[in-house]
Amino acid sequence: MRQTLRRILESSGHTVLEAPDGRKGLKLFNDHRPALVIADILMPEKEGLETIRELRAQTPDAKIIAISGGGSFGEPGFLHAASVFGAGEILQKPFRAEELMAAVTRMLDGERDP
Image (cartoon, helix red, strand yellow):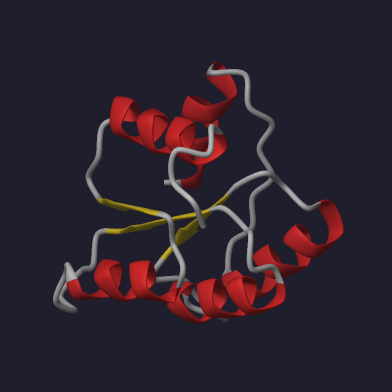
């Protein structure tokens, strides 16, 4: 999934940093301060909801998109929780490249506040 997201975003001119889990993702965020974070809900080490909560606590104006397929854990509950915890956009997998890019554009253009 990360490779697919990278390909879509880079083909639209975005620079992409990626991390395999929330712990490493928070470190990358603190080191590089990207304009936008895309967090999967189900990740090893530090799952997405915890990552979103921590990111929002340390950087209230961070722009966050949460994504999830939910597996067998009762979607869309996780994505709703991500929205409550501070994700400005949510996308349920599978989603189309156009849906991703529309969410990215809304977040970066400030149409959706954090």
